[in-house]
Image (cartoon, rainbow, N blue to C red; front, side, top):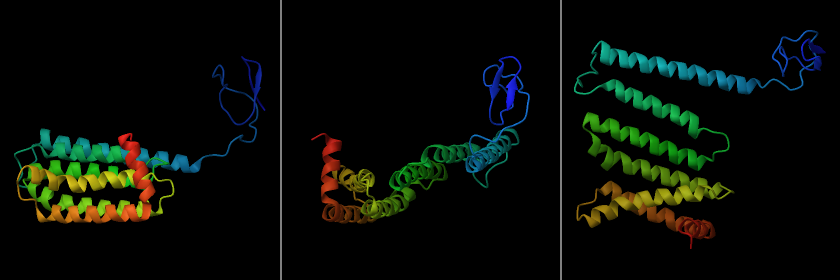
Length: 222
């Protein structure tokens, strides 16, 4: 057993320093009190490695864009490194906040889709294809997310998936009513998304009616 020459205490395990005064312990090591968390060490190393790679890319992109004035193909009217910075920061946000232990699949899916679509819309604005994303890509992604969350809500025993399903259904319905109020023609993709939203809502009531009612009452405080 190791000893501290200053605190005059004995310390078990394989510590190198005294837990009180941080002086170097003398003596022989004892067997470890706790097993080594190899998985946590690996995950920590993997996170640090990807974070280092991300910062290499960020610094390189900013340097090429601002210092060397390297254009991105034929798009030289904006600083493309800012888009790279935005995407990589969104990636880091996903790593830190989305893939936490204990987070259910519906929450991970919904938050991930929101982050990705927000980044895609901002990028599409600079490339001049925002309307294509809003009228074609966005409704397809929303429909896919609704169907995926419907499946997850069917197999989810905790009931946490229902709130994300109802939120996605609301997102799928709102664009049509906005176009109706503004008296504009709604794109056919959003009309199909509206139909899918109602079909999934009816399916949720049929298979999980009590959970749907409870979730609506809890969110509306009725």
